[in-house]
Length: 124
Image (cartoon, rainbow, N blue to C red; front, side, top):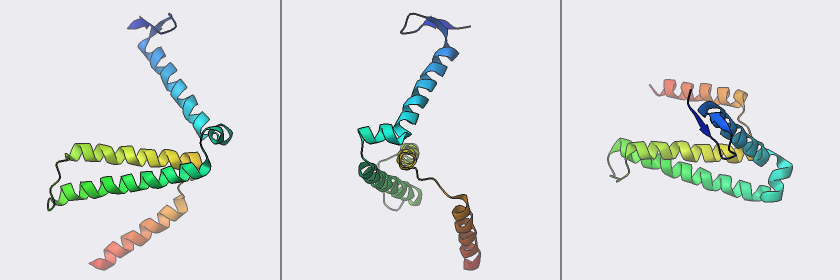
């Protein structure tokens, strides 16, 4: 078993240390998502602005990836970099939505999926 001394001078396993870091990150995320804590640090309108910026950045990354896929309008960006950027921007947007208390709606998503399938089917 691999053990080492943590920053507090305790002998811990890698697993224990990893779990501590994970728990600390989880607590920080919960604090940010806690409305009372969050509103002392950043206003709700500022989070809406940030969410809009993240939407724009996600749209930019998606358009860049479409350019790479189509290969009509060359870009020096590599596909792996762009796909990682898409995941990062989507994650940023999801964090903003969580901070605002906005969640996806399964019923709406199912309706939209069925409508999309019908449109694709009707095209042929």
